[in-house]
Length: 83
Length: 213
Image (tube, rainbow over all chains, first blue to last red; front, side):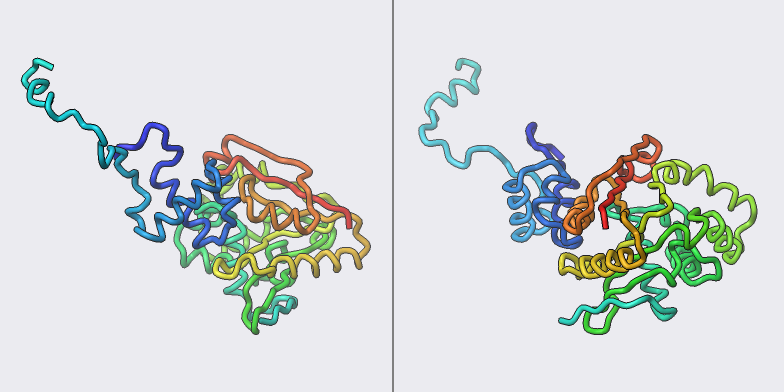
């Protein structure tokens, strides 16, 4: 699994966070503290788990979905080694 | 929803075995009982024997208080004075359990080194204190005040018996337990950490919490 370089938690730790809240009935505050993230981040993983299940705990692509002013005209040149 | 607390009875043994297991684990996946008895069926038998057998210890059902919700046992704890037991070590009751399970002497002898780091961190139970241990709530019924009701009752009993100080303990990092005990007036008095303990269980050690009664 390729993780974002600044990711504080690996997917297994996100799962621990989610399980502590959902199964062990920890408060979100305590569960967040226990794995070393903010409450805001804890809520993010809880929401993703709710929406997508286990798969939601993986990193998402951070590739821009849209590039506003893409320079496409130069592409063939660059690929040919003249860029 | 009606919460009632009462002394445990023999019929509670299966539930008390579960509570002993939960209390041992704290917030971790495995506790000392899982290490001693990896087989779940043997573990259940051992804990029922420990809670129901002839040797009285601070894991014995006669010292347990149970919280019922709508007539069903949902949480429990033990409250006791060390003088009442004479010896707070679990060595004798556990030896009895091992024998009843038919363990060979070599297997019994191997237990000591495995559990040594655990026993090093286990809080002292000083004479004169009113001690609460083995606290557990069914996981689906947490954060509903069951332990608070049990603790209030237990502290009242300790007070009426003339105790001036109460003690409780939890694994370092078991935030929900620590929070619940803080709400009941306890504060951390001592922490015992041990590298061997951390390797064995995954928590740094035990917090001993106390409060005046």
